[in-house]
Length: 111
Image 1 (tube, rainbow, N blue to C red):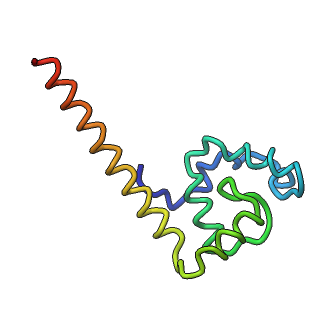
Image 2 (cartoon, rainbow, N blue to C red):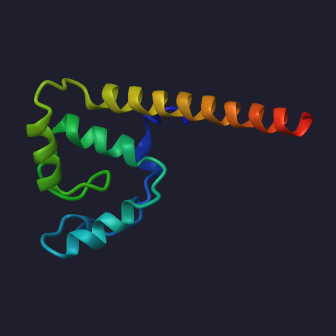
């Protein structure tokens, strides 16, 4: 899956009431649930981290969770680049693993 630059149009929350995403306390879990399975969750999170969004749930993380992440990784200059690279590496290794399994199945079937 390639990086989506126009992620807002594909976001699971695009039709949600913004008041439901900018909440406090236990309501944040409901807001985070909107992000579950969102096809552009990573892009949303990267944008929020790079823009230092202070309020609301973005990419499945609350403002407190994002602040903690920013404190733990103060040297990251581009969350988009970091997350895009991580996704590409994950997809590459997953593809290699699938190819390896397919070869093993073929080899067992030929034996």
